[in-house]
Length: 104
Image (cartoon, rainbow, N blue to C red; front, side, top):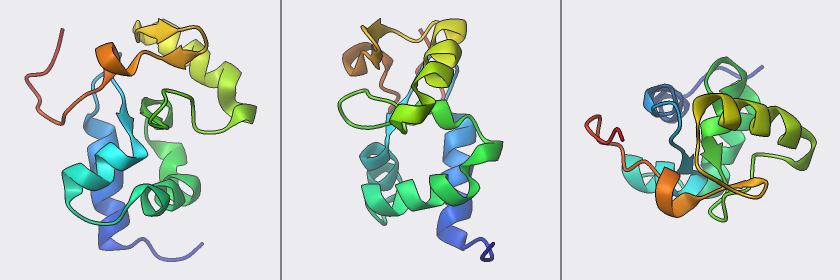
């Protein structure tokens, strides 16, 4: 495995701070950090994301990380009370903007 970059450390730190029941999209994370883009965040998550709450990082349409992880995502989302629309996260209700006070 390649050494972790400072960007990857910032991505993983932010993902660890997403509250239960909330999510951020790959693009939200890049925008919050002011660097990279959705693909760069996705690469970080695919390499090093196993140790953080990866199910809280979703596509902009509310779908989970990968189709083969859907059942695991759904189990985590239901356990945490994440607002859903079918088998996707309801982004209008579940999106977290990065402020710690944004708990419902």
